[in-house]
Image 1: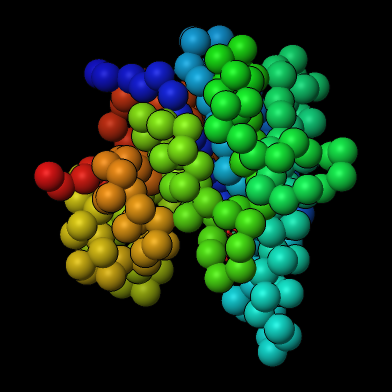
Image 2: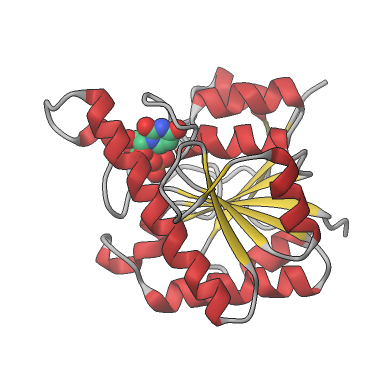
Length: 236
Ligand code: UDP
């Protein structure tokens, strides 16, 4: 079983909200943080990107200006990162939030060098605010930051246990892939990951694993190389 040394964990905002679908489910978030702590204690370097769907989504915000709606969405991801980083500190792990734009003294501005310095010291670095640009998603933000920090893998923790042949909520015959190439995911137009993120991962040869955030100790197991969920590899 091969484990990883440097991982970027992507958590969807909805997954953090649990059954409430809005805001924070503290039990879920504490479980995530305990797992991040275990990774740090095992000597892994850990970065985290959190979505914003538990507060706001630009594309479903009605007929308001999309750019403004996306700005609100990016700020939602900052709120999520500030919250989870604080839970990290309360559990005894160092945590830093970096954003692509200034948020006063609440966050640091993203820098590859300082991010890597923090990670080498055993701090979790949260990349909040997505890419800093509208019309993108935190999937793409995660892929971008993952490439920049030269992560070994992106670990996408979701409310679903992997990538399916079609939406399992709509099609009971849908089957989960254990492995799937990122190129095939794009060819089949599977919606598990944003297409822009997938394209970047292909170009930079960055694999992704999609797994269920609800799986017991799932983040640690996936990071240690256990094959749960769907591994999205890059074809040569
Ligand atoms: N967002 C953005 N640019 C980015 C990342 C996120 O504009 O680079 C905004 C967008 O409005 C998005 C929201 O932030 O809907 C929350 O991000 P997330 O990726 O969670 O969106 P979702 O996939 O849930 O729509």
